[in-house]
Length: 479
Image 1 (cartoon, rainbow, N blue to C red):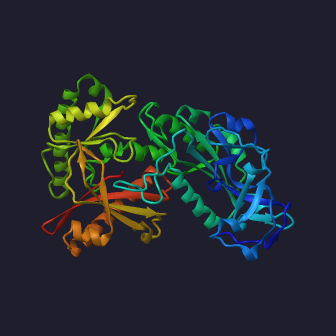
Image 2 (image 1 turned 180 degrees about the vertical axis):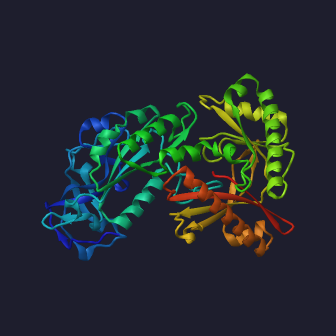
Image 3 (image 1 turned 90 degrees about the vertical axis):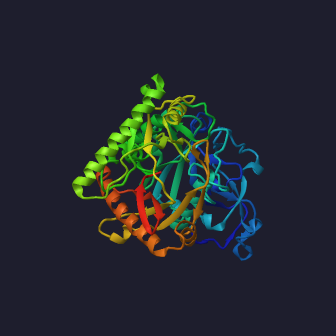
């Protein structure tokens, strides 16, 4: 983390302080003008240097990081502060602008410091600012763990903690808090670009784009078209997307349309997939189900024909069960299993005709038996360095329950537990599974190079495995 550069401070001394939004007890941030906070989306500088006065004398010899009362007490002097809901901070009340901060975040004005320099990095954070906060879902089946779900304050705070640790107080963050899909169109990329003063800049989008109108009351869910349009416009202003992915690649991943496009490729191992139009679902879901099953069986014949020509093992010729799912959907929400035409009919209608649905198609896939899904996280892949194509971490997951045909809860395992629970302590089989998974990942990374000239910084490859009678079969798809 950043160093402590002050040894003593006297009451009334003017200093520079690195403000951090995650430390503010009431969630206030700096705005250049009141209108930036009052009108939505609320936009302001949530992290960065600003002025303050020392409230009480402080000496480093009494400082204990674990004791909040030994931190430096200051009063902010910036005149305009608002929270994500547009409420103004009463700066005329000393108690409202008084806070304790760590001495690492303070620089004296009579000494050269980061506070007087151009930021190395400026970031734009697009965040949820609605009345209901994002549930981090840190605990329980399907929970995200301590870091929390990606749009949550938990996750964003963790990211910002890591940034301060790595860069020190040499960056700034401008955040736009949106309450609805409509407000995404009110963010002005040209203006934002002028607010970002750093040597480098980037944008991060902490929202979940979906194919539904607003009105669902789920925090951080916004219309896909409106978020992608904002991403494109921000990128056009020269602010590169750094999370989750640049706009065109994000559409490839989130739409899931690549599953239908690539399912016949003999080396990429994608479940057979067909896309069922919304008009077919709306007009006659039973007919759509019947035609979908027929389409999957046509694809099965084509796949076996391709495999025969290439001398590859034959796969299932007849498809009689599978899953129906939506693109632009998160946390396994819109995935249902079917075992016959009637169940598929019900699934198509249930998925495609939900309240506020802007869904244009439903995916129908063949069913693939598997014992475990191994999620491989590839970080900073570089074809010049083959080691970088190997996963930094593998998370082994197994679905526990299937509620009304939907997949909800799953267990996470480490490798030893997976070996015991899924591979019956057959280490050779698990090692073979990992070898085959790596071969698949290499092929998919090569495929990704065609999708984007700049490989993703991080990509997750979930690879499913079946362990039976000492052999392993693989299928692959991206969550």
